[in-house]
View 1 (cartoon, rainbow, N blue to C red):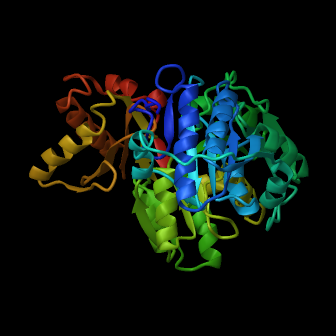
View 2: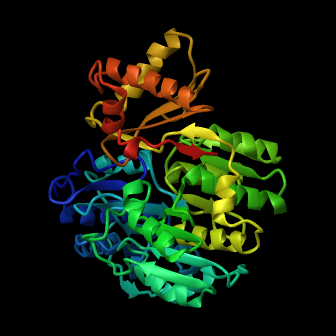
Length: 478
């Protein structure tokens, strides 16, 4: 009998994630393998695919994880280092019943974790939470074997299918020292056009910048090179390659909902009335534009696991998140793959009469903040949106509460939700005018002040600095 237990903070909504040496330890990886292996065996599974990102702690976690999986009686197909989408791809190419990725995703170097998939479906929520009890029970035992599996060439071949790329494009790529590096080194030489690859060496210290492309600060090098070299666009990835960011030829950032509109526009040309899913952080302009084009939209909870599950349920052909996760069912598998999304972006630009800058210039003019992250006590971050919701309910406000609270005002809307991956509250504000945006932001600020998230009397400038409004510049979104 063992006395192993998991730190309660690491069993998250979408995945398992913690800080190495503080909340996450090498022994945890072994018992995660035993627990997940038990679940797979209960589903009559026999084999599993495993891969890791480039973090310094990933090799040791992966080794312990694989031992736990083997001790659970599963055979392990070991892909070694690579992006999370390549692991998902393994579920369609190898004789496996599940997959598990060792990755800290976009978080700081000291963080790490595990993303899981079972029978080609996301494994999340209550299934992950159940590990806290499962670890105390009698688990399956066996003697699985480990098989080395290199899918790099096969994965790249799949990325290149169904594409007609023009040789006119000039693209700057930023791997950010993340797990996409080796893939991009082998993929880019096979692409027509002109290409510059930045930060391709996989390095868990992330020396160039943090591996989070949703933070504009981390795109500065990409923007500079695109502008200096007079290239058409720049593409960046997060630490494990399941998210995409892009800048146009003038260095302007296209946020997730803008890129999703571009992808949806292209999809609807071939599939009128297709359904597209977008998360609660998405601009209202996106939903209005897709409806205008004849498509169907679903607003859904943020999180790659939630989106994939809803996509399967609704049979949507495309989905995306503000954070840069994109899910293509047309010509692909429906999982989030930042590199494949980049291929689709280049493909549609190759056949378009517009370049990315011209597309940006043609976007409807709404005024919005980027994604805002407010540091918050993890014990309070879920309670605060709920308390605000109850207060606004008594005041007659209209809102959506499928994930946090999205409040509708005359001038626009604001969103506040708890992040499931970081100890922050995530917010966003949008309006039809600059003045309206200031009023929407003030309304959110007032609610946060009541909840003691912000100090009473804080100026707008102090508020913007507190919530990381990245230079305070307004961003025109869809």
